[in-house]
Structures are given as structure tokens and as C-alpha cells.
Image 1 (spheres, one colour):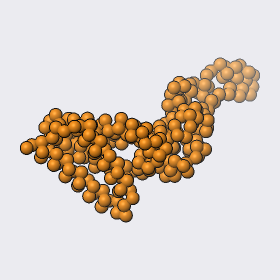
Image 2 (cartoon, helix red, strand yellow):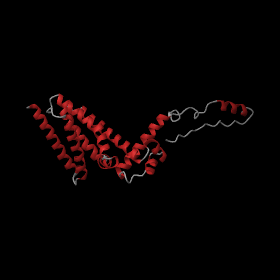
Image 3 (cartoon, one colour):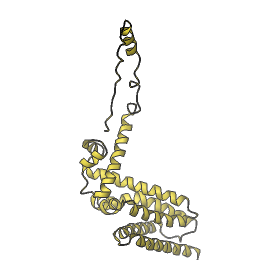
Image 4 (cartoon, helix red, strand yellow):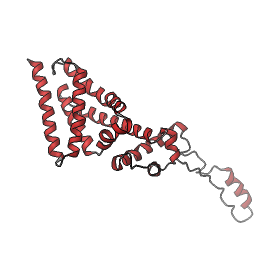
Length: 239
């Protein structure tokens, strides 16, 4: 857990003279400003645990994104988070557990950002398109592709990685697709199959962009292609 500094005030020194002793006693009777409970001391164990985990997730995310899973050390992560290495084992059991927590946290952050973009879109279909654009931009420009698309499948295993990806990111995408179908903006086909198709295409496209010699140009082409495909689904629905 994070270390708390516990300070105690000292009684003021007695003044010289005949009244020194009584003044010193009076001073000791008054509470020192440092005796009043500070915000740090008033925190519960649950709050300290939450703060510790937040600090570890921030430090671990930086380490995994820049160094990769294999080269990121728990000692360095603990030091960056200003906690003990034992705190990692206490909260996450091992390095793999910490990585999974980071991966899930990154996924939730991406979905939250996408939801903001989707909410301001004029139609459900446009929200899907803008959400796809936002995903590619976030993953590629914010340095999380290594965590989300490269290390996660190998560290967590393909089955676990897909389950988490579908549960967090896929569920949000499917919600938008189903809404677009109900509104008549997309042809009424299998929503689950379309979600899997788009989600898989986005993951693969993000990797292609990262590995490209011209990432920005590759991203623009990818976004234009995704838009065209979804617009074709819209035209099919209008027929």
C-alpha cells in the first residue's frame, strides 16, 4: 500500500520567566495543528487500496506501452508507482494479472472516448463510422496498440483476449449496430456477425497502420474504406 506519513506536533517550549511552566502546560493542552486529522489519515483501507491500484495501473500502462510486456519489470513499475513490489502481488497476484488489469482499463478508456464521439453523431450509422475512426486514432496515436493488439493475445491467450475484447469493445459496437438496424439505417442482417466482422477488421487495420511506413496515409485509406462499406449497408437498407 501507499506509505502514509504520520506526523505528531510537539508542545511549544515554555517561555522564560515565572510563568514559563504554566504556559508550557497550557500549550501542551492545546491541540497542535498537525494533530488534526489530515485527509491522508482519514482515508479508509478501501480508499488506500483504490489509490494504490490506480497508481500501479498508470505506471504499468506506461511500462507495458513503451517497453513491452517481456521487458517491463515489476521492480520498475512499483518504483514508478511509489509502492512496494509486494503491493503488486497483493492486488494482482503476478505480472500477468497486472497486465490483464491494464488491458481491461485501456479497453474501457477507449470505449468511453468512442462513446463521447458516438453520442454527438447525427445518426446511428454516422456514430458507428465515427466510432471506428476514433478507435483507429486512439489506438495508433496514443501508444496503446502494443498493449491491446500485440502483447495481449500472447500474454493472455487468444481465447481470453477475444473474450475481453468482445465484452468491452464488441458490446459497445453491437449496441450501435442494433440501434442502426432498428432505425432502418443498416440492412437487417445478423448483428453479431457484423459486429465480429467490423471488430476484427478494426483490430487488423490498427496493426497495419502501426506497421506502415506512412501510418497517417494508411489510416485515411482505412477510414474511407470503412465508411464506404457501411454506407453500402445503408443503401441496401433503403432499397
